[in-house]
Length: 332
Image 1 (tube, rainbow, N blue to C red):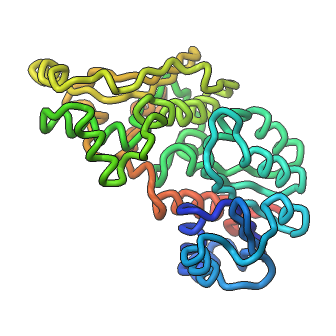
Image 2 (image 1 turned 90 degrees about the vertical axis):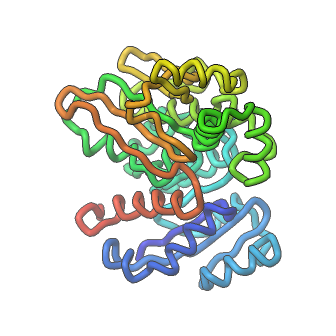
């Protein structure tokens, strides 16, 4: 049986637990028997034999799990084969997820994470450590939600030389820019409405200043180009200076404006508002994410999908789980 530990039991962690419970038959046909042996949030936990759905209900009703053990205490006590790490992102320190991931690797456990922070701060260190211990790191959920990116560039396009990637990697900014284009409303008004609708956070700076897109770009670029970039290597400009007038002028010439993240094989890393032709596939609307990959053999490959959300992120995490433990991929 595959023993799973989940650290982080907010929206994403609970979404993963829901899928593991409700789609057990389908998943077990792909990977064999599994069990969640432990779950922890920042200050409480549960381990041993328990119902996933009851753990979810307990957390949602009481804001915590039944027992007081912290994630670190739990890691020291339980045996597990794979850690699903969904703790909050900190792109400056990578913590606490970075420490949890390193400890899991030291324990010779595989890791699946939705947390951008550790990979932005210590991508090469994590990958080198995983290689030394002979374990696998799944991180599809860090960059595109349900949109398949990591497997696309690292496996499906194997044999291709990838010259450049360009993408829309943040749904909040794309929503704001889309409405500015369509309705001619000022940035501040749309941002205020986006907060009320829950599309933007109460403090939206992480999104609108381009930091989230920059973090995702670092992870994708490190994966494709085998570099050791950090967020400091990305030239970042956000969207707060964009005006309805800018959209009017752009539209008259057949363009729109989108926050584009770009990386190329020469090491360029850039996130900034760009003019995009209305006929370009990246001229997308709403909260969707998209990525355009330029290759030598396959030409241009375009993917689009929801970049965030409980079910969407859980989809990417389960995809990594099946990829690791599918009957044709299992080691040992």
